[in-house]
Image (cartoon, rainbow, N blue to C red):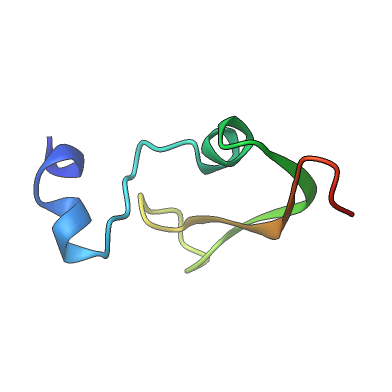
Length: 60
């Protein structure tokens, strides 16, 4: 319930249940490189991150 109400306002639009990789692909991007990591290293609802490069359509 917090994810749909208070949480996004407290942390700049972040949604704990969002599958960010899927959202990027659905927006028409192709994932070129993707790293998954925890930050902070302790496993909490806010520690899951992805970092990478996405390209539009045929861009290289």
